Image (cartoon, rainbow, N blue to C red; front, side):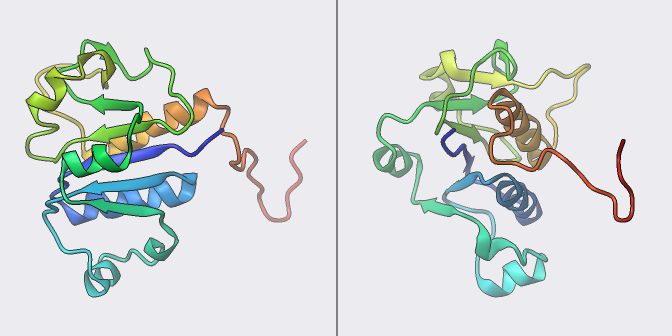
Length: 166
């Protein structure tokens, strides 16, 4: 299996991006950040957020959505949005595909969604909840994509010290 890619379109909250970065490191997933960011990614801010794993993260920054598209020609992109007709489990995530999430306050811009309706996916929810937390949403969809690929290259067994599972 190739490497999966998470894309954050103009993320605003550093703690969410930090959590997502940690999830990406734990799963061998690449992270792509489309500017403008709602925070600074300098060494001091990263250390303050407790992101000591950031140096292990495969992360790429882009000036804007057009820059992202130009640098990833032909990329298969899934757009996570509450406005999608299909759920995140309705699609088959290809090797090396990209899964994009929008900023916390507004999601992915509607002009992008309108032009990509066939690859928009959503997480089902009840009631009038606006959306789930961004880092939770990324984890839900990413782990479905990883499950579809049988968690290739991931540890599938846990071990307790001084205990033999039988």
